[in-house]
Length: 142
Image 1 (cartoon, one colour):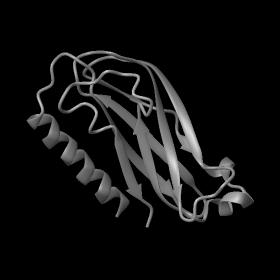
Image 2 (cartoon, helix red, strand yellow):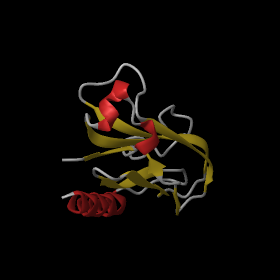
Image 3 (tube, rainbow, N blue to C red):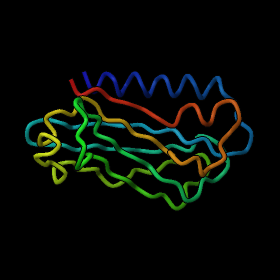
């Protein structure tokens, strides 16, 4: 199911890129794969810059969305990207949520999906019309 969701997402990105012709500016698009089970809580993230301009100094949040949401020990991993050239991609270090398991977040048992948000602070000026609408992707775990 998760693999099918990843394939569908990648096909949607390809179709979107064929429709959207951006000027020379950055366009940041995340893709995500998840290995989440009893023994493993791993998230693999790749950020694609589908525009021709470089993107510098932006954050990527990898959130383990919970229900109910814990008030303490929110499972979130942050990555900083210094530079991503146009028409290229970067694979981030594996986000391992296992060390974030804590009694306050039910040892991650209440996580129902993974959400990746690229440039959540809006520091990168992306392409008008297509750049800011594709910075987030969610993958349900069940």
